[in-house]
Length: 419
Image (tube, rainbow, N blue to C red; front, side):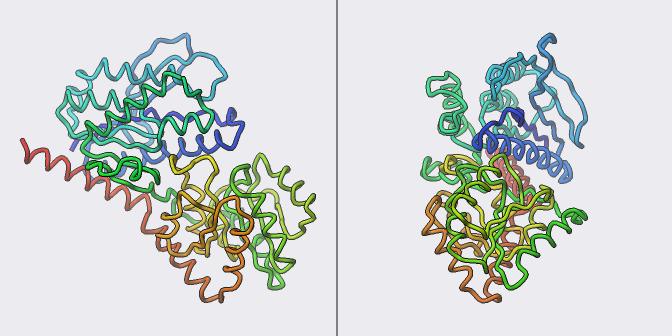
């Protein structure tokens, strides 16, 4: 089986992520890049021939061209496009050009690689029109991935205006995906409610991307440090992720202040707004909230396992139109009970089995969730932690890769039967 993966894999410059919204978009874009590389390698191990086509930005004094290279264990065809010097966060012009060049060269790409499956899409579906054309020209199975709703993501996240012509292009690409694809991966909570009855929709949650490895010495030290906050029978609740505006942090801090000195809320990982939240805690006179320094942002589930419980929150702005699971998986992988401030991702947390779900940005609801956790026996909390770890391991990237390959293989066989 020949599998052609088309994805711009564009990750905006993190230095330009000057808000929590842009930081989240960067994180999801990087997760998308890693996932496509992983799937390509997994498909290869399963016996497929894989070619990954992706965008590569080059200096503006160069001409657009193709460049074939072996990178990251995969055969990759880079579409090298000159990038104009500008301060904008996203590169719409270059992304448009990427799609146009692939469409223009569809006959050549179809003939040279002869794909059985064209797999395209990602965070934004710029590659869908080109992928559709290549699939039609090669008479191959088209499978698309739609990670978010383009209009809601770009406008709510403040990444473009509601009148930007890119929205019309992406909306048409979205419609084309459903009209032309054998299967559409809908990787966000509102996929099913937005497209009820779509015969080719495959709702899914992207897998945990946390690799199994021996934790570093820094991580071991950090875990012991986190444990130390619990000396003297103090319950330690650790915040999963960087403290940012829009993640129920203020309400969590205010809730912590109601539980006294036998409860410690710890923010292990520093972020852009750490200083703000330190000041917020001090101004409210809350003394059982801690912001330790120099904890590495690696081996995160292992570090978090030093706490008695984990708190994680969905964003205010994702609204179920956007994937944001990285922190969720880190929390579940710690094998601890979790309190989650969640509305749009509540079904995801219910499936995990070891999560107490509260309402985002509601101090009373968050406090009740923490109180429920504190009122449990140690044995009950361990049961919740085991359930979370089992869910985490079941939804590993390895298992996800096997399921995707099996699905691709079934589509190809069905197409052969119909011929």
